[in-house]
Length: 430
Image 1 (cartoon, rainbow, N blue to C red):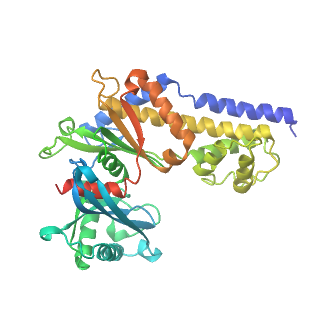
Image 2 (cartoon, helix red, strand yellow):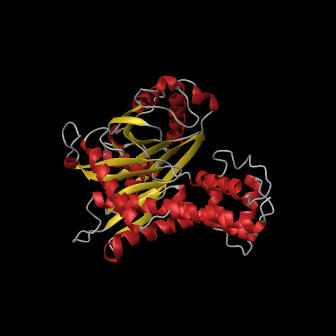
Image 3 (tube, rainbow, N blue to C red):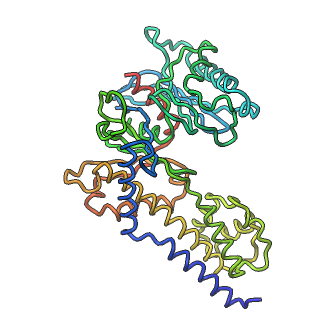
């Protein structure tokens, strides 16, 4: 059995190797940003022309803050869905009030038929509208407008149509695949006697962009840093060679860039497993929990990373509760925190490079006019993982430099998938 000193030396080697492999000097990040901007341009040239999927949202009008009236949002992205009503009061009042309700989808409907699922959703939407709208008739028989956030892979053909590519999460409704989800919802609403028009089909990144643009006309992109990473930005339509048909009147079109999810907890688990197998730093433990894929989640590593107790008590608790690792020394716990830091800093710095790439594509990474650019960011990773957020913001400043940074702002934007959907319905109805 290795002596404790040898164990620690071996463990430190693993951490040093990780630190070296995860290094993200500014020169590398600039290469990533430039590659991102280049791939974005290539993705605009033709379908499949880039490793970055440039998916057209067909939204060519974003909210201005002057919209008035009642608008609805439907957010379907998991085992629950939300319905929302937003009352907009124009440029002086903005959002007068908003109401929402969350509904659980019965498990049997997740593997039933398309008409059953959308029938249930339309029924609940109808109940919500009836309860919320007593005595508030729409003027001149005008149809109610709905923005639909649908967080599953779709192939979009217009602002209010998209065919389902495949289900993810707990859904497996075969007869919906290849069908237009907006048409399915519209049909279900007609059957319910609900006089409502789906004005737009979007996802959370487009909604984040819209929700933030409503309050600030300088917002140029909406970014999601959550379980997955996802962004939408405004592009000039004449800069999209693969665009078919007439150019929209506004000349603007929102594109969306999708990249792989940030599985920070899983990366840390793999490093801890290597640490255990190569050094024995955790003692003679059963590694079964450490060997279980995705057993360590990002909220767990965030809790350990943010542990400020003198003896790193929270780290000890998490190692015990989640991985069944007990009796660790303070030095070992410090090593675990360092691993969390290395992995998270790399992710945050690469995320900042992605944001810089979007600014570069838009020509907003050092222009002489110092035009103000706001990036609206949402998602649990950005919202709750403070060290990730702080590192992303400081890295973006490092990349852009002091002068350009003065005209670039990062804002946390809330609930793009809900309020943002209703706001896009409002902007499309103009």
